Image (cartoon, rainbow, N blue to C red; front, side):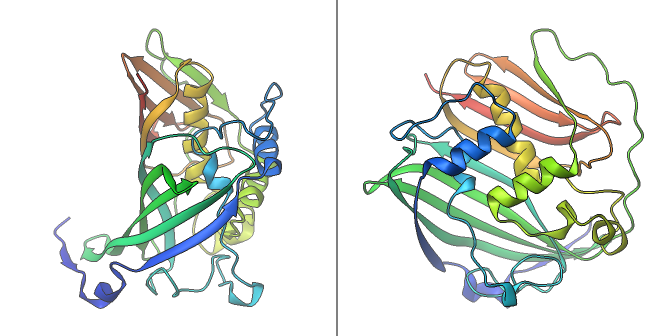
Length: 285
């Protein structure tokens, strides 16, 4: 894409900060385990929070009157008021310094690091990079940098063709996931995410041009991390992921993890064999 880039319209948002206090209570952790179908999970106060499960805390709390037509909070506030209608959590990079502990208060400090716009053959795009630091007892536990992408409406997305997937590499960890509206609703509820593409099929298809309900990118990332948590036998020091294509509730998809030393290469494959997400875990020594 031949693109022009312009950060000026929202330059005043760079450096903005926000702080949220929350308590890492037991109930969301138990609910997350149920949603992930982990019948063997047993959590108590004082236990470490599994990696990425901090996404079930520090939730947005916009009033109902401040929700836009797509189910997201109206533009403005901490995030810049970018008017492009389509929003997605495109990727992130995380360092796990020490586990958050269930039952204790915690704090999330956020800073907008960069805002830019690009235009080219595929239309206008805007990129916002936000860093987060999650702390307990005044000590950082998790450092995270998220990439949020805004774009213009595009052409309708065709339903993926279902094909027989190639055998996974030798020694790989795999899991097949059959997404359905109940799973997507439960994840939306746990993250207080009212984006209608995840539960409102007529809206997703007629307004945003998808062939079905969209699987949350963070849900796919959490499931990839769970593949590591249940197979690696080591704690996680770092994680990164990047979304490449959407997944839908139309057919099963496959998670694949390939361990090599202190790293695990991960990806999610759609029913057509297309890579929907790539990720990497660094294991603690």
